[in-house]
Amino acid sequence: MALRPEPTVSFQSVQYALRVLEAVSRHSGGVSDDQIARETGLPTVHLGPMLDMLRREGYLERLAEGGAYAIGDSLVLLGSGPAQERAVEEKVQHSLAELRDTVGAAVYVSRYIDGEVRVTQYADGPLTPKVNEYVDFRFAAHASAIGKCLLTQLDPNGRREHLSRHKITRFTSRTITSEQLLFSKLDSQPPTVPMLDLQEYAVGTVCAAVPLTAGSAVGCLALSMPVEHAHRLRAAADALNRNAAPMVLSLAL
Image (spheres, rainbow, N blue to C red):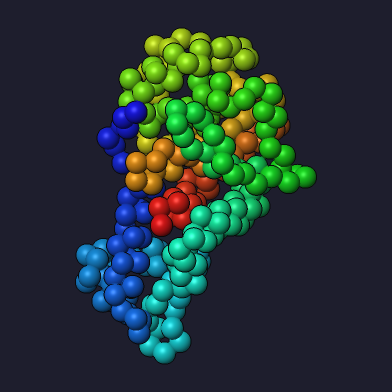
């Protein structure tokens, strides 16, 4: 499986964040934002919001004396050896629950693992029900926002290989059933714009997804909501995009 070469905004943000964490970890007694800027080469306009995000996520903490930055509890926990996988899952689940409440929709993390679409974690609730998976997402990559977002991260050969195993099927009147048209839409999708599903997978449901790129892994962050809330989809998708970088960071550490 080959990946498309263009990086996403989330990937770039995570690279910046990792550089900041590496710089801070070199100073056990804390380090100023000016020193972080010198060591990372990041301009202040980018560094300030990055430091704020890392503090919110618990990766950094601000020392009272002098306002220096030090490694936070979340980063210590995620680097604790055998417990790392469990810690990452708990961190991602907590972030998903917060994101669910922020966007007012069920939210999902999905990965492309061993040639299959897999939803690895999700957060829903009484007012934000998850989509009725009446057809396994593994067989609906061409129709769902999750699947299409994952397919955009594969090269044409990887997509064809996937569709050779999971044939394109019509689920609703909006489902794209032409491989040529599907690939054209995937290729024209800007990497920084959320992928949408407007009742292509299921009548009565709209969805959005953004890439989660951590190393060679292919993943996405997605949301779903009833079609009567479709007027909120764009704003919710934008909020999803803004919150993708912290999620990728949890998966990358």
